[in-house]
Image (cartoon, rainbow over all chains, first blue to last red; front, side):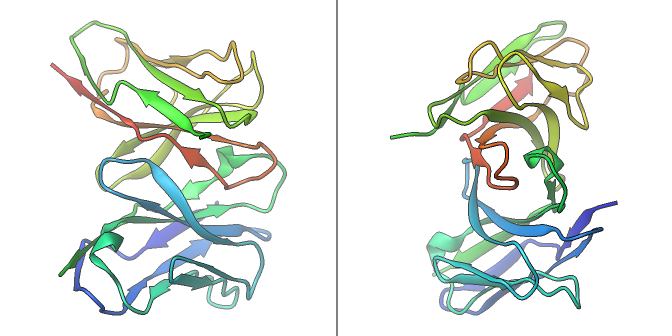
Length: 115
Length: 113
């Protein structure tokens, strides 16, 4: 079946540190991959996505590249800010017909950035 | 501004009581979803609806019910049959064919008294 595995947290970084959050997936076919972010007390927001191999998604200084050979979609940011403190979810949508009911989420990783 | 609104933000349920969580969207999306979030567990799908007057069970539908009488509204009822209802509930909407691109509300925290 389809699944997503994220690195476990929580993680605490200092401001301006480099961030990597690992995400690997298992899927049949040609999935699309997503990163969602959840700020404290709020719902999730789509951060970025990639729909095919070697695509790079980017937004707000975050980047992730769809690597089919390593089945990975790691999230990176060169210099984190206190405002990046949130829970980050990796997600997969299988490359089949249908809507978001098939979306598979990772367990999420909590990031805290200290000044 | 378009968006998706959940209410209330906090809700308390007594033993044997049914409670209803509200979800309204003005994004003109055809599809709506309910998720349950438990600490460290990620999101689990409870119910979803592709169109008005139609809805389908998700992975953990037991103890929950929904209705979709209007495009804008998708209320979730947590029934007394749900023995462990304490969780954060998230409603989302999307254009059905735009798979994976969900817009979420800010959630309802349900607790048992």
